[in-house]
Amino acid sequence: MSIVSALRKETPVILPLFLPILISQYAGIANGVIDAAMAGALGTVALASIAVGAAIWVPFLAFSLGTLYGLLIVVSQASGAGDGDGANAVTQQGLYLGLGLGLLAALALYVIASNIALFGVEADMAVPASQYIKAVIWGIPVACMVFAVRFYCEGQKAVVPVTVIAIISVGFKALFNYAFMFGHFGMPALGVEGCGLATICEYSAFLLMLAGYVSLAPRFAGRRLFGSLRLPDLSAMWAILKKGVPIGLCFTSEFLVFSVMVLFISQQGAAAAAAHQVAFNCMILFFSMAAAFSSAACIRVGNLFGGGDKVQLRFSVSGIVSLSALIGCVLMVGMILNAEALASLFTDDAAVIPLAVSILYVAAFFQIADSMQVCLNGVLRGIGDVSVPFLFTTVAYWFAGIPLGYVLSGMPLPFGVVSPVRFGVVGWWLALTVALFIATAALGLRARNMLWGKAGPVEQLAAAQGNA
Image (cartoon, rainbow, N blue to C red):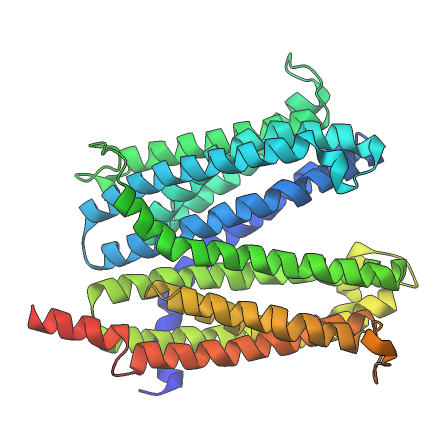
């Protein structure tokens, strides 16, 4: 069948997965917006302290989230194979694993927070930032258990209830912030420390609502997640870790790439740094679409792979990848046509806006590559292929993007060599776009070999099922 036929038939199947997950993604972003808005009411130091604290603890949460993503792969494949008991068993092990990962992250962050001055944080921010981190980190173990139950639901296509609960939790976050930061409802006014405490309460409410849903929803009747509890099984946890750790490292690597870019860009002046931040904020808004689509692709492919229908799997992947390219093109056109309006949303500085617009024109082409790269990663994760894609993206970012960005931006080269081009901050985004296209090409070839190759896992699975 043609690509057009695959696109037409797969779109109504993938969209009901994609759209609720996208809303959940934006609900997560809303939590950060709420924190920033309420911290701003406490003053500049409070706002800066939470920003510093978030820059330290969020990477740990991102790694934990990526690691537990391995659970989504296993659950989606088990669901596709009709193995509800297997999905229950592995999710319980995911809960144990998430609790352990969260506690380790919390302990590491506690040590960091106790010595935060060693990281160059200014004295007026060091104490409140440390208080915020020490409060929020104990929510990480709860957040990891939230991810486990969430992936259990999403892997079995129960995405709408998760989205509804995510939206409700945003309301809880605002309420808890109001109580603990400003001292309402009989609570003490704890300032930035209260923001961390509110995060713990929000994740706890999220977990209780998810647990209530899986325990009462008719779709899980007869195979309740907590119907019979199992003891920790290290081999089952290891199976999750083997799939999840490369994804966690991938999430962390991408975060660190932008951190390194910021360090270099900051040497090129305040206007360059501000313009980069404007483009980065826009990119985050658009990237949520790609990330949500990647999760939907992983679930859809995992279900089909678990079911063993290689013809339908290949047909669906053709439609999924084509739709991701179409979404990337739409985002590209939207960013080009609205570059100045987007920049004006984040700044009114006449010196920053033109530079930010120039970056956004480059970032528009970034959207196509990013949409395709993230989608292909989701497709490959759906069939359990995680390590090689991680290497592809890491090499593209660190061995192509960073060195090329250093040259294109006009940074000083060794031995007195003068760079032939000086694009400034725009050069970093040009390099990142090139790196993404390299990663996309490599992942495309990988997907073709894994799904259509005679020695690929799809052929092997079909052969095994045929023999059975």
